[in-house]
Length: 74
Image (cartoon, rainbow, N blue to C red; front, side, top):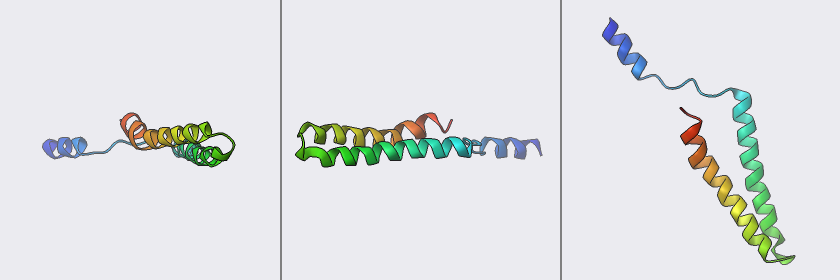
């Protein structure tokens, strides 16, 4: 019986983060990405805004798919 409990405990996933924390992080990453798209649309004002917006969008995608899974699912 103990062997079965040990196997079940080792196969258990993490409890995860709170719902409020998940909503806040998701909203921040989404706003960074959407803000990047908006800033990219300002390229007619100055071409540098396209590069700034592209950087914002790339950072948002990096955070969403690399940083959050690595550090927040432990």
